[in-house]
Image (cartoon, rainbow, N blue to C red; front, side, top):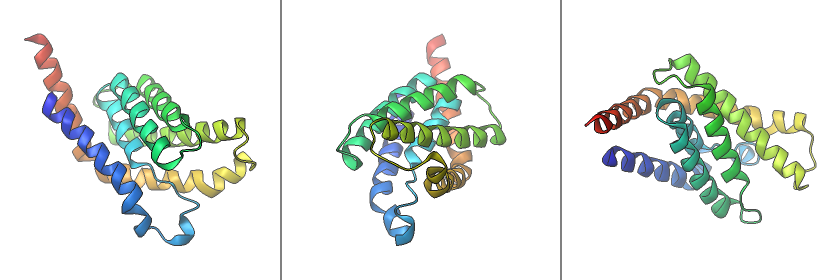
Length: 176
C-alpha cells in the first residue's frame, strides 16, 4: 500500500509541475487564455472512481490548495473546495470499482464540467468575473472538457490497473 500510494502522490506532483512548466510551451499563445488543463484533477477523478472517494477528497483539497497558492494567490480556496467536493461527489455517483471505459469517460466529462462550473460560480459570487455562463462555456469550459477527455483516454489503462492493484492490496492487508 505504501509504495503504490507514494508513487500516486509522486505522479500527481509531476503532473502538477508539468501543467505549470511544460504545458504552456506546448499550447499555442492564443489558447493560453482559453484553456487551463488540470491533469491532476483527472487523475484524482480516477482515484475517486477506482479506489476511494475519501482519498480523492483529501487529494483534491491538498492539490487544489497548492493550485490556489501557486497560480491564484489573490484568493485561496476555490480550487481546493471545488476539486475536493467534485471528486467526492463523483465518487458517490460512480461507485463501481471495475467501471468500464465509457463510464469513466463520462465521469471525467461530468467532473470537469462540475469543476469549471463551481469555479465560475465562486468567481461570480465574489464578483471576480463579469461574463455570462454561456460565454464561459464557449470560451474555456468546452475546450477544457475536450483536453481532459483526451488525457483521460491516454492514461485510462495504466492508471486504472495501478489503482485496482492498490485496492486489492489494501483489502488483502485488512484481512490479514
